[in-house]
Image 1: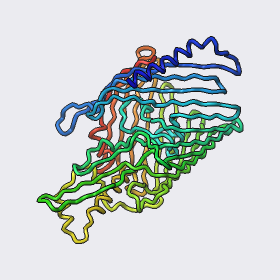
Image 2: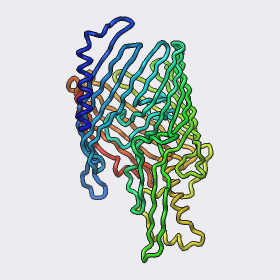
Image 3: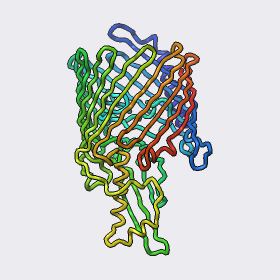
Image 4: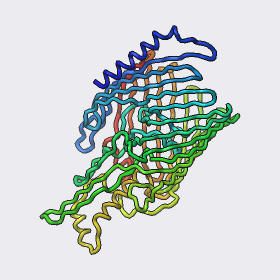
Length: 462
């Protein structure tokens, strides 16, 4: 019913815009614009279960999207993006309505003000954006269009244009919306309960804010930014731990919670060209407000950077990027991240036999190591390379692409080969695969059971 009501509202808004078209004065200084459209998409993701070699489907879906945009240039504007998905993900039914974006803007003179749910991404690199902290992402979302992973956030922003070469922006987020962690579908040990956050947390002091100044020079664009607020990628904390030794068989129970933390990020990004070559780079220093030494869910301070180039060659385009990070206050983890596997109670009992062994401290260190695993902080330095090759052939009807990202430090490898066909206007057929591979104990080794998949989708735009 919620979906039908939202569809009814947006449909009638579109009708009102069309009916009112004749009443809108279109001139050089008062140009009205309006557009409404969307798409229908059906698809599936499938793979072989390595436990029994049987075909399974981590995602099957039918998607409906409706987008609306209208306003008057240099005065005001509205934008809405409504999504509905029906199907199944990770063996669970999905029947979800998502108002992905819905915001209004007002532009008096040299200012632009906006309010509502919006996706804002800082940075200029293609695969890694260390400066981008305003919008969360759903890293488990199955879609051939990777921009669908981005999630909106309720925010209020003001942008000032003192000249054609400079703009200054301030953003305020009164609530917190967490990302969906790629480790959320990981099967926890039987004694562990994981408490997740709601889609939006509107508690006291959960606000965030950011500033960004951009400079548009003759041959380059650059920006400096500052973020002070709750990081869209939350951590995991140990809320409760109980060890019962009274029974014949010892038992444990642990309660983990997805927990946000306040982060302060200073960023810089830069973009220019050299002939046919596009050059981009960005860097950021992240310094959490709380200490990681006393809070198991808080990461260590770090410096992240990325640099990329792209070059067209006829119908082909090549994009390469290097990214890395350095942990400024690194302390080696005291435990291995074993939370993604079943515990061996015999090993626990053997540890209990040692004088002074603290089981709660042991589990806490497991949680710390697990956080460091998905934050890539088990080592002091990390280095990664990414390469994307894509082409438009047959007058744009045949579009092959290949993306690979390799982390030299962890040896995690992601491969996404894909072919897109456009046999007619507005119709897209896409098929490809997402393959994750890593050495034992790495992040991709942990997620490859449920994230590896081949996919097929058909989409019609309207």
